[in-house]
Length: 132
Image (tube, rainbow, N blue to C red; front, side, top):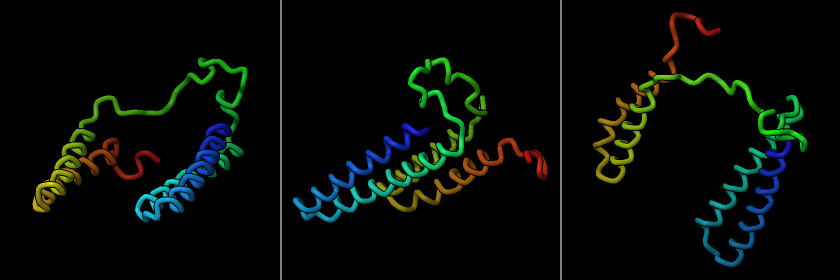
C-alpha cells in the first residue's frame, strides 16, 4: 500500500500544478474548479493509503523481490448469482434517461432503484443480528 499512497500523492502534486497553470492561463472557472477538486480527491486517497499502509502488514506490491503469485489468495466474498445489480442498472439507466427526456421518468425509476438498492444491501440478511 505504500507505493499506491506515494503514487496518489505525486499525482495530486501534478494535478495541483496543472490546476494552477490552467487557472492562470485560461481564466476559466469551471475547468479550474474541476482540477482543484480532482487535486482534493487525489490527496485524500493518497493520505488515506499512506496512513493505512503504516497500520497493516506490508503487501507483496511493497516488496521489490516479490512475484505475482505472492499476492494470490482470497480477495473477498462476492455473490455468485445476484440479480440486484441488474435492477440497479435498469433503475439508474431510467433515471439518467429522465434527465434527458423529462423528469417524470424519475417517478418510474425511483422505485426500481430502491428495490435494487435494498435488495442488494439485505441480500444475505436472515433475521436480527445474523451476520454479526
